[in-house]
Amino acid sequence: MASGNFSFTFNEREYQDLQRILGEIADVDKRQAITNSLRRTTRNMVQGGKRNLASRNKKKTGHLSKSFKTTSSKKKVVAYAGFSRSGENKGNHDHLVDRGTVKRWTKKGYYRGSVSKSSPKTGTKFWTDSVMVQGQKGMQNLNNTIYQELAKITRRRSK
Image 1 (tube, helix red, strand yellow):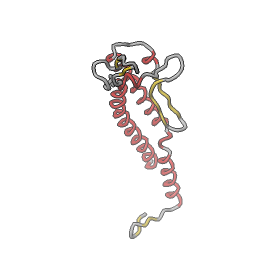
Image 2 (image 1 turned 90 degrees about the horizontal axis):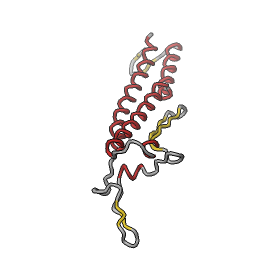
Image 3 (image 1 turned 135 degrees about the vertical axis):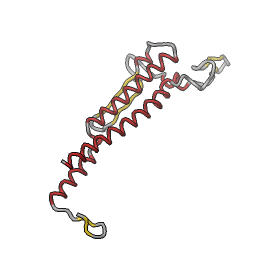
Image 4 (image 1 turned 180 degrees about the vertical axis):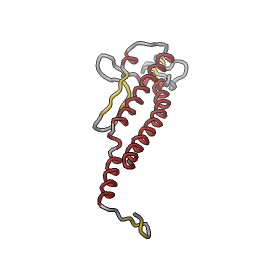
């Protein structure tokens, strides 16, 4: 209850309720809904990257398309999307196709081209565009999920 100049006095039950709510709010990032939202976002990034790769590079199969992967952790509440860089389906050349390379020559002067033939240093941006588009949508989805989880916590208090 308010008494005077912004000082509050709580009885023991109100104080315990407040501490419980604050503890739940601090642990909101450990909830399953948040982890699922992160996983969904990384899956969407990979699907968008595969679509972009198939349409922009005119190739639907190969090591690069098979090397897309997602990883997430329940303990750290984190999710990653990217390329497998070892194993059977290696995606070590993903950055070259995505961002392109400069024109290259050997020491003897032989021209060896660039990954993006007609316009060096541009690449197809198949992964960069996917991350930019799906990342924004994922952030909005994650924010909405966090607000929903916080609303659930505060609704429980009012019951």
